[in-house]
Length: 148
Image 1: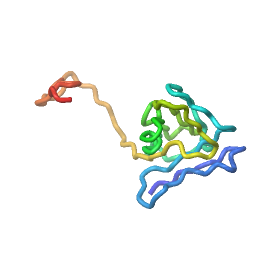
Image 2 (image 1 turned 90 degrees about the vertical axis):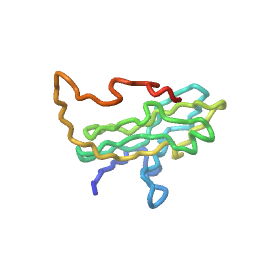
Image 3 (image 1 turned 135 degrees about the vertical axis):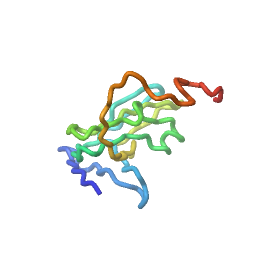
Image 4 (image 1 turned 60 degrees about the horizontal axis):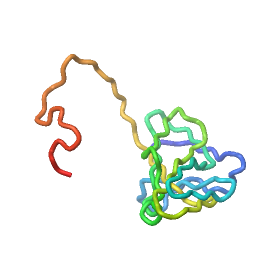
């Protein structure tokens, strides 16, 4: 288990802190800390504040992901998905939303807008070599199998 510190930022005492909506949920729902309702028009993107900052151990990263219900019902999703919050970041957590739907979407203060998922980050050491080992796939990339 990892301890993650959370700080509610001034002026956001009425905003819900991130919370899991079921016992086995992997993500914590995030809430909009907008000063007033925001209209997100089709094709428009906006950075939405959440009203909190976090401090987590260096073995973790936090990922911001879309809420499936908003994506399915309204076409509201996150750009740069998953958005990565590094362990050394101490600023306000914000969510980059885009409206891929057909209608304007209203984001109200304290409305659930995304989810936050924590992942353990392995320690990696990159080792430069002159050649890589061979595999059956080789350098086959996008669409190399001929299937959609």
